[in-house]
Length: 411
Ligand code: NAD
Image (tube, rainbow, N blue to C red; front, side, top):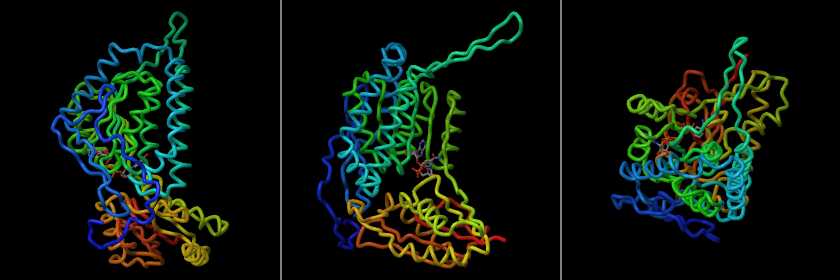
């Protein structure tokens, strides 16, 4: 790898072909206006997987224009919901038919164990498309009796052009959890995948066209947050923004809306969720839950239970069992079926997580397992369990977004 430590990429069978690397605007793949590209990297090695078009404000303008036209004059918002639903069902079938290839793409781009990617990431994507396809012709308003003489009624209408900004931890699931409801409602959209993981979104754009989603309805702009993302958030002709990502960027998105056209903003941000285990809990089950809630997707999960509170009577037994169970936890190449945990998504995230681990050590928490990077190359981190964590430590307060579990004792 380019990090120079000579490690190999591991299992390199069946690598997917990278077919789509350009922006998707108005039904066609095009280069960025600037001609610039960004590199998406293999987190197993740090090597470049592909150069992807780097969209910026000018490209967002073109995409919004296409989406506006498709909304104001196109068929999609005007066709019966049942017809949109039919096309979305076809779209779901196509994603399912290409699920093996998409699984490889997603595993490679995000460092996710392949088996879990197929079941969870692609499985959930297909299910949400079908769920929302079924909802497309069931969008009801309400009738309200307001007084003896007056009735009110509400209609639910598509809002217009939706700006959809997605993170890198579940690129496929996040794509469809935003795109599918917007499609069902009859909206048109500009999607910005995360710069770390742009590959599956471009493939999904291609499949949408094959399924019969009209040109201009789904546009995908790959690019960076402060440029392409910010251009969507502050665009005067984007009617709403749905954003999933960090709390700090969520604030920027809301601010950009306030300073532009006051578009409604929906935000799904970070977390630091507690898992509370009482003395009468089944230790085996509690340990199993703590492991999956902290180490699933290498801890890159907004719902990670990254604060584990143990009542004092169960503490020692829990710690012992956890240390045992972690002995059989395998970190390694996500294409190896025995592997539980792949590499962190990129160098920045890897270094961020390692710096939190250093904070934990410096603040006096005890390392039960892990505590350092691992592997010959790439962005691997040992699953790390800290005991003796106190509520006021940084590791107990801030979202780490990596394979780090914090155990705290309570009476
Ligand atoms: P991030 O906020 O850095 O990036 C998310 C997206 O926003 C990316 O597409 C990025 O390019 C874009 N972006 C960055 N700066 C922007 C700007 N100024 N304007 C507009 N867009 C911008 O977050 P991340 O590091 O990709 O994801 C990690 C965070 O996401 C964690 O905090 C995690 O908890 C959260 N998350 C939450 C959920 C949820 O459902 N609540 C799901 C997944 C991730």
